[in-house]
Length: 114
Length: 116
Image 1: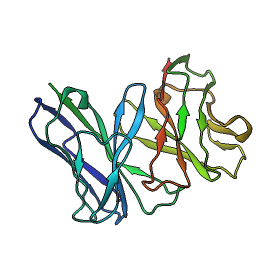
Image 2: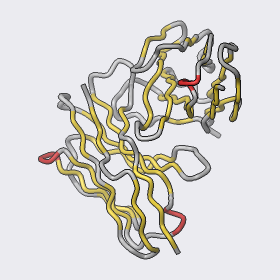
Image 3: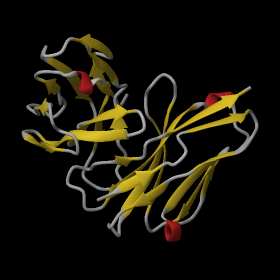
Image 4: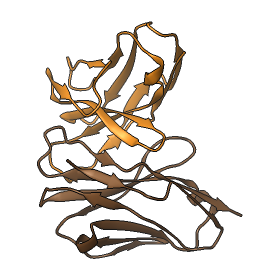
């Protein structure tokens, strides 16, 4: 079964404590992305990766890091989380770079930074 | 820059009513795709439909229908005979052809509440 798996699903943390949200896919897709969802703003892309060791900034990259050491994994790293990073986060994958390719989303990670 | 606007932030209807969710977009790309996603209370994103910029045919899938009008840059979504299970947040999204990050640009979402 095609899956995009995020962990954890829920996380409450304190300001400044480094955290990592993992994303793993079993579809051998080249493209992976992270989005954050905020009320009234929809989803906005944070970072994306076109393949192993190839990453770049999306629309809202400040305060985040990513890495792509293996094709299946694309972790999102918050080195020093702040309350304005409280959000619902989604990992997404697509097979290629075509505009019409369907994106597969993980279940979401609800992060609260206090 | 691309932009998607869903002017209706929240809609409330009574079961069996028809409801239309509006989506207006802006893009300079000549080739682009439009999408609708459903986010039920459980939080996951469910893909509903994809439409490319060269295909203006309306589409119907059961109680769902979509009206794409390039002249008004709109891609509206109608649910006929709404049901309680249709209660969710619905997102319209756009992806342009010239898009290195394969980024989807989302509207702010419309929360639909269907009351029994």
